[in-house]
Length: 246
Image (cartoon, rainbow, N blue to C red):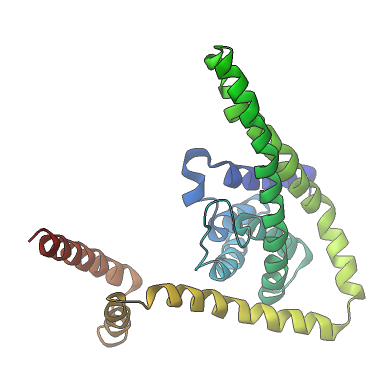
């Protein structure tokens, strides 16, 4: 992996963590950032497949406040990059992605901790009547923190990580690699189970089974089910609101 490719992959992670241009709804997802990593490395299809598989781990991902149980874009970028560079299979990449996600949550807490010091700078600017400089502690400083804690580390991990990963894999016994593959194969099921646990509540139960029935017996595609789901959701919401108003 070249330095330019590593810098671009680091930039993808930086954008995902900076929420530029609705990046949280797009690049933040392992499916998207994995595909972007594949494009950078000249393997877009392989990157999309690995990213989509990693996305299953975080399909039930919920971050409450500043607390996050993982870091989806770090798992999607670095794990995909290392998997494509070192020739890892998808299941092993999943196990690596889970570990990277946990490490990324620590990095995120570090960013929030450092950014909290900028609040005092903003208060000083307000007290001295220098509101026009609020963009410095409110935007510039947090972005610079992300450069040092997000962009640079991921760039170094990708640049030095491929060869380093290959050397480690050659040393690790085959049983350990097999165990990582087995664990990685279980992770998507856990992600789907977490998502089902959130959906299978109250009135949503009947819609869950309706979706399965429409797919199985009517042979509808995912897009077709999604269209019907939007229509049903609008009708259901209107009925609920009318009932509440009456």
